[in-house]
Amino acid sequence: MTTRERRRLRVGLSCSIFHADPEREVFRGKTLHYGEEEFCAMVAGAGGLPYVIPDLGDAALLRAMVDDLDALILTGGADISPAAYGEAPLRPEWAGDAIRDAYERVLFAEAYARRTPLLAVCRGVQFVNVALGG
Image (cartoon, rainbow, N blue to C red; front, side, top):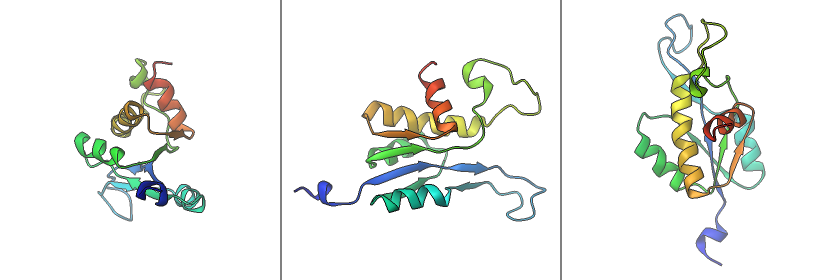
């Protein structure tokens, strides 16, 4: 049995993002990248090692992170930006989260190219649909 076969599977989790908000009481003005405990517990409970992958603004670094994974989960969150599929938002005050869309675009493209197993949940399913032209 190889070392890779003996070790626990490394499962990457895309982050949710709280963007900097000068009005927020806690972490005022700071951007927060976080993983939901439920996803981490699910992966660990199944025998895997959860790796929450933050958006560090470096596509090459994100690609390197995906290269080290055995699987990737695109987690839930706010809907995909309508601009991602060539539409205008129905409500101008909500144009989506273009930053998270761009970050997950890199994660998905790398995982897809490498044929890394992928689980998409809620927003993640929307993202895969848009990324594949659906």
